[in-house]
Image (cartoon, rainbow, N blue to C red):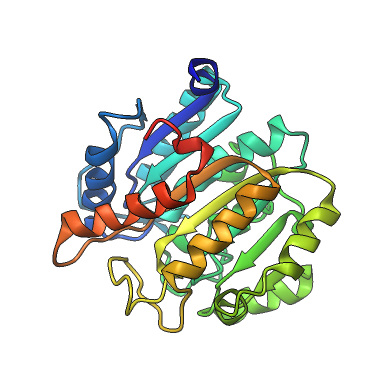
Length: 287
């Protein structure tokens, strides 16, 4: 157990600037507070100054870029085989995913559980919010300086969009152009995992990264997110999917992002931890 934990880097990366919602810092911090007595985290320093300036058509660019550099340094220092990220906005994914993809010789499969595609570029984004751009960066397109600090880029066939249901027109065009695999929330809610599993198996790798933006969940069940989007995946079906993926693949990376608790904050955090426990993810074996 100790050897496994030594090879796992647990990141606390509560970046919020990518969404311009400071509440995401508080949401990530709440999860961290519930877990830190049981899991040892490396923390990425985050600017708490609320003033955000748009540069390179990205709001909060200077903070986001600086925090990316810090995350890359921490990951390089630890050189982990597995990474768990408790984070703020989806922009935190660039360093851990690109690192693990490089470590596993460009064979990492990425499950992108998200109501949104996160496939905009600075020029196509209607908001200049970076949390709508990280997957496009990971696929090799976006701000040049940020791209230059990725460890690797993904091929389209490595990416599996699950539950995406609110896409901007440029994102939809990109998905069609690159023939990205996409599975609807309805497909998952119907329990139809077979096609997804088959496509994953055809890649020929067992290394899996799971990106979990909590807004993939049906907001009537779980409203504690920055961008609640109707017609999401039920918590029970999400649990079933994660259990199925865990049984067939080696989950080397996992993130939990965009948690913005409303109402009973502690209960909301405990609901997420209960989901972890019921799936018994190996990255959370210390919990």
